[in-house]
Image (tube, rainbow, N blue to C red; front, top):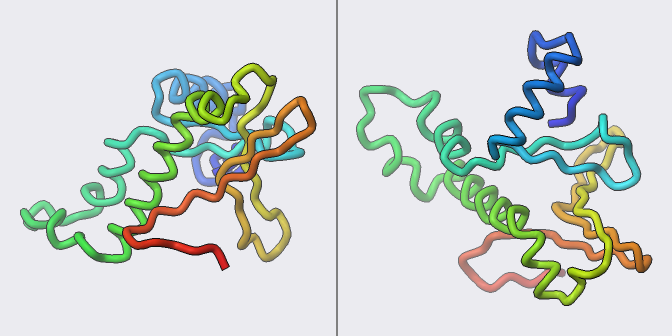
Length: 152
């Protein structure tokens, strides 16, 4: 969600209070802000980055307390596959420093960014851009697949 979306979906219309809450959640490792490519910080995308919290909200929060097999019943559902994809993306996003080192660009000033279509369609998104001072942008589209996957 963007900061604007968080404000509209909560009762936190006092931006000073929201800024404090977002800063504390970021420092605690629960969320990660991603500045969108070519946008201001206010347009940053906030992503839930704590794996346990993501699991809780996906499978436990709205489940029936009487369903002892909630997790087992969720296996191989669309919800489960979406969660696996989210967790896979989050592993990459948590290791940008290591990715830069593996690419041999750790000494180049660069920024990890995201990109999302802001038009009416809002269907396109790029998970990770590394915008480098040497005028190169590395584009990463992160997909989890249990089978070989070809981009067509």
